[in-house]
Figure 1 (cartoon, rainbow, N blue to C red):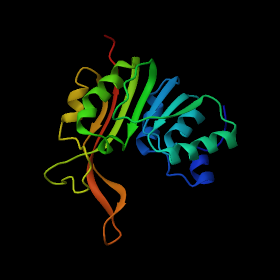
Figure 2 (cartoon, rainbow, N blue to C red; figure 1 turned 120 degrees about the vertical axis):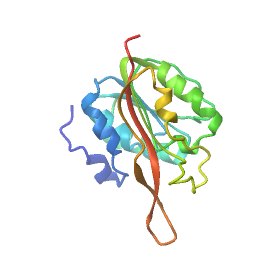
Figure 3 (cartoon, rainbow, N blue to C red; figure 1 turned 135 degrees about the vertical axis):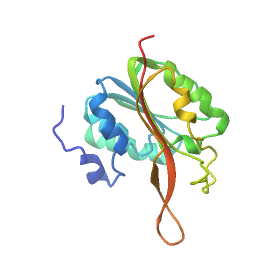
Figure 4 (cartoon, rainbow, N blue to C red; figure 1 turned 90 degrees about the vertical axis):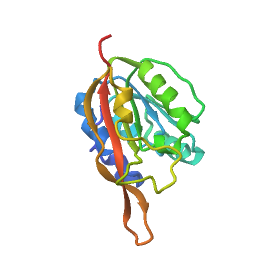
Length: 199
């Protein structure tokens, strides 16, 4: 296991830092197989791999995956597998210890979400975890960014009503996008870390 600092890849390759909720989830997780849905250039996948996970990283953007694959090659990384994948149409199963989707679901079609979450849940091993962070559409922070999908209040937690919810909030956060004045755009995010129950 490497002793590199957690921000090694972000610093060396000018990546967006590992998502704060992935950092926060790590102490809860048993090292195993992880599935990163919408991995982008790999900020979370590289971090999890660095901490001993075997990671499958999916994204629909060829350029993002090309960047991630170049990092994997340059660093001679093992146990990290990328695949070009459209989350709007994929069905999947497996036995993952950790399935995560950070700031991705709002770019998907609304009809995709129920089946995607069902597959995430079914593909998670007993006592494994799901992490989802996604933008919301609420009265006080409406979906002004024309995201195809945004969670309503309580919607995400309802999907996980039979799981052990470790963390759930609908706090205000900032997108990487900026408004016409250069300020980062604020919206509510549904943030959930849940553990699969023992049924």
